[in-house]
Image 1 (cartoon, rainbow, N blue to C red):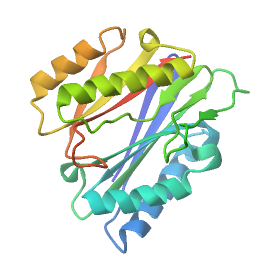
Image 2 (image 1 turned 90 degrees about the vertical axis):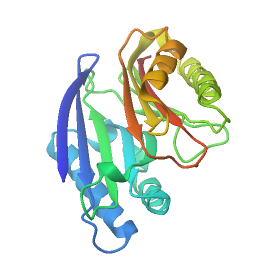
Image 3 (image 1 turned 45 degrees about the vertical axis):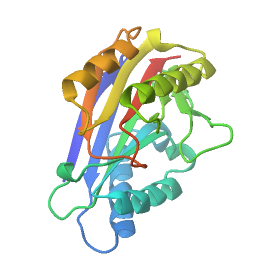
Image 4 (image 1 turned 90 degrees about the horizontal axis):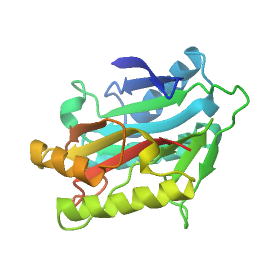
Length: 227
């Protein structure tokens, strides 16, 4: 299964490619093949490795998520590195598949623009954010507080801190993508997210998933903003 999607981000062409593994061999091999195909699709679309700004990983279960995440971390280095997030969501996967690798690449308006990577301190597997051609792409932010509201509060603080480090703020957000646990009431969750990120002038997309890198997590939020 392969899905190709073209959209625009602040007048820039954005290409997303989603590749499902074929379910054969080890999870590591399946993830490596799917990721390699995704990279080749980015290049076939006329974009370079340096244009990759975000990756997402969907996996069958926690074991597959960890194994595929290790492959992604080892493979997406140098110009391929971007903001990242990962989820467990077996309902999303085609029959037999254990992993989906998804990459998003953006064509800069300035052909000479170079991607800049900002690490957390101390560094973590995902970067805090990457910037390309004046656009900031935050990695997914999560939290393990006891309640959904407390997690939202903590995530909002992390988002604000990262945007400040990038020289911008939530009012300049272009895309907010929230990945919410299927255990959370969808209507109540959507209202809580909208209230917590009320300054944003862009739509907020809410997608439901089964799980994350830790069992206590109930939501992960990505933000893309003008720098």
